[in-house]
Image (tube, rainbow, N blue to C red; front, side, top):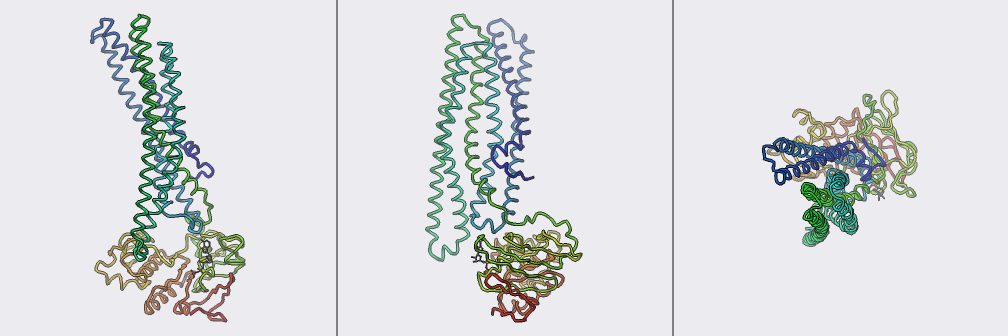
Length: 562
Ligand SMILES: Nc1ncnc2c1ncn2[C@@H]1O[C@H](COP(=O)(O)OP(=O)(O)OP(=O)(O)O)[C@@H](O)[C@H]1O
């Protein structure tokens, strides 16, 4: 479930408050066991060394020591497991929430975002939150619990030791905050560099052909290498600060423990203190600083998470412009008969609409071709229909067979973009993205409908032929026909195709155009096209000009682009 407005580190932490609470309680119980364990150990050593006890006299105490040791280890293990489980659940939820949000932002809202940047935020960025929830938050709580327990014990044993520990302990977090202030700026820089590196990497990989063609491959490699080097330098700075923090912490802790030892030792020699108390205080003193050390080790997790949160918050802040396709229409049973744009104004800048007060209707069984000059707004109209761009004014609605008007019907659309995406896998796997249960006969049938069967069967491995990402290994026309077959496999009520015949030779163009005309039967079918073969088969042509629509049954008074 989404929690809008609660997407800060604190807000996220509250969502797993129960998990972290249980982890802290378990950790607190482990701390109590530790203090008891040390007290029992001090008593055993004192009894054996100074009170003439034999080992056999101490068997009960030794058994208790063992029980405390095991109990503490189990409790600490359980505390770590609970904190990690809560953290992993939360980060998985955040990742899903962010992905759903990006779907709602849609391709139009994401136009200005670099893909590499988003991949880094969704991957490394959210992974950087895990140690914050699993380690930093419980350790921050334990940094209070265990030292207070130790101080509570020491105050009964020795006032001087209590004063030394109580004065030196709080200095550690103060110093760490001072160092951390500088470290945060370095961490922020490191994250910005990682995001830039991610984007540069992806851009270079995607633009390999263009870069080679323009002789810029060497420059691109040098640019990425330069960025990687800057990232290395900043990472080394982060490590230097981390090293400095631990070194100073160790120094303070050692100094404080030494002071306790010297002061108590002197009084022990003077006969003003007993051995058991002195020994117990010396055992407790390092444990007093232990949670501070653990906290210090996880402090960089907080800084890393704070830096990563900047990118995560920026993505969450993007306004949602697309209809969420994950929401199913309740009345999906009744097939749609028409889609209408009623007095719709749409575009990307409020003061410069691309489409102005347009009205048009797309009807079932009527193959509609949308045409017009480049840049006139054909894709904008398709984005409106796909629910990727909300109208500034007016509305887009669909009516089903029973006359029910629907505002959400985008899950009934089958869409083939101008450059369809194929994924790394076989031809059959790519087709089955539309219907994972489709049997080989069904695949053959849809391939035949899309005029793809002959070329698939001519391949040595047929439907098992592997294709690379974005259809590598196939021609543009073959990719287009596979995408058409894939969309037909879903048997959509609405079929929208963007320039489906643009990359085909005249013979294939005729065959695909015929296949599309056939597919229009029983569907609302909208095709963006310039080419005559496709326009010739249209029963309705929607021509866009100057942000307006000229539509009518073919060919009444409409000029067609050749
Ligand atoms: N994401 C966007 N942000 C801002 N402006 C955009 C965006 N997408 C398109 N435009 C602008 O909207 C106008 C219409 O573009 P659109 O892509 O709808 O035209 P088109 O008719 O599909 O063109 P083509 O036939 O060349 O694909 C153009 O002026 C374009 O620059």
